[in-house]
Length: 124
Image (cartoon, rainbow, N blue to C red; front, side):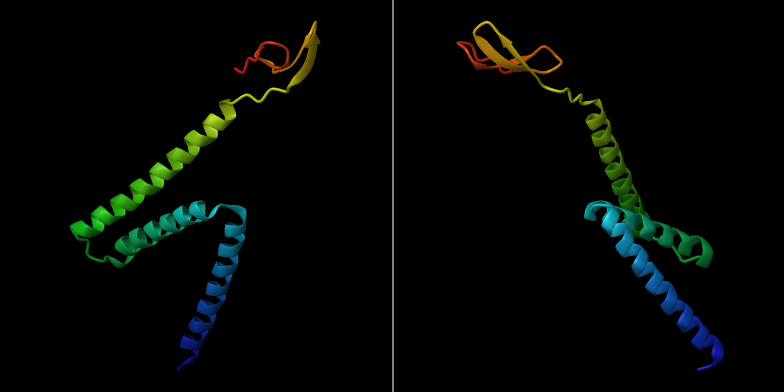
């Protein structure tokens, strides 16, 4: 082995080590499903880069697989975006304790009441 090969192997080892450190750091910040989707996105990028840079031949199966992976990433991101928007729209109001005549109830800011003691029980 010549010096160039040893230098390339050393560089490859350092880059692999850094990639693993980065992967564990990212996994600690996001859910496992999000990490899997990000990994799929990375694979899509690597395949696309190899097609353009190296000029690998593309079959219809390759195109269908890449389209399916891309659709999955887009669908996951849309579902996550929609879930985040739904959570932001939900209003969480503080509960206040009120005592009137002979009934006690908790009331949220919407005017809906839950009677604790009294003849009526209203849960809205």
